Length: 139
Image 1 (cartoon, rainbow, N blue to C red):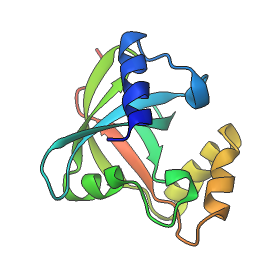
Image 2 (image 1 turned 180 degrees about the horizontal axis):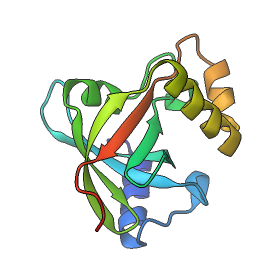
Image 3 (image 1 turned 180 degrees about the vertical axis):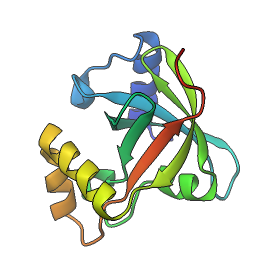
């Protein structure tokens, strides 16, 4: 894990999900996946979009890098994961949004955070959109 992500994770957990720096004011979650090759737990901060009470959406933009982030590959290999939002922890199952659903979710994210349009413009790959369905819904 890189040092920046580690600092964000520590700040998130110490402050009930509130962080400063480049993520200040952004809807942020911590996503813990199982490594596709290693089988080890990997935690990454990610901006998310709520899509109903038990659906969270994350975007494998990797800042517009030519390759998606490692967590994307991890979710394809092991779709069950854990998210932390604020002080809550939930088990989730990931599926990749396609077609009209992907387009709808992507458009909502770009409207909420125009930087995502910049990320897409930086890369020739179509940025994957992952839907995380909460398996243990809130009471």
